[in-house]
Image (cartoon, helix red, strand yellow):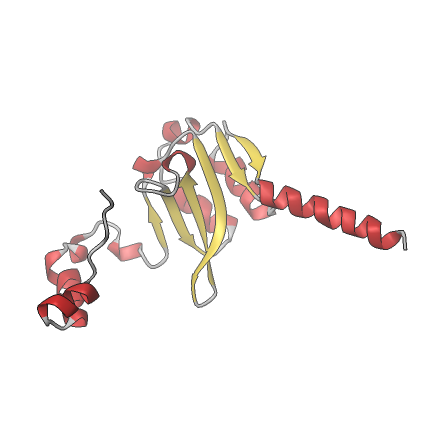
Length: 158
C-alpha cells in the first residue's frame, strides 16, 4: 500500500478549514518546532550525524532563489529517510568543514568512500573531514569531461 502525505492544503478542502492557518498552528504549537535543537542555526546549517554511513556523496544544490547549499548525503539511504547528513548554506569549504567537524572524529573515520565532483572546495572538505575515505568523482562530471574533450578534438580537426 502506497502512503501519500497529507498536507494542510488537502485538509482545507475536506474539512473546510483555513489551510494556511492550520499549517501555522501546527508549526508553532503542535509540532514542537520551537523546541527543535537545531532551530537557532537551521537557516545556515543542519547536521544529522546519526545518518552518517560508510558511503557518502557531497554536492551543491540550489534550494530556492538561486542560493547555493552544500549537501552531504548517505548514499545507502537512496534519497529516503535518513539520507541527509548535513546541509550548509553556501559552498565555502571552511564553512562546511566547521559544521562537519562537529561530528566526532571516530564517526568520521568510518566513512570509506565519498562521491564528489571536480570542485576544489569539495575536495578540500573531503580531505579534511573524511581522512580515511577514498574520493570518487561522480559519473556525470567524468562523462562531461570526456564529451568536452571529444568535442574539442572534433572541432580542432575541421
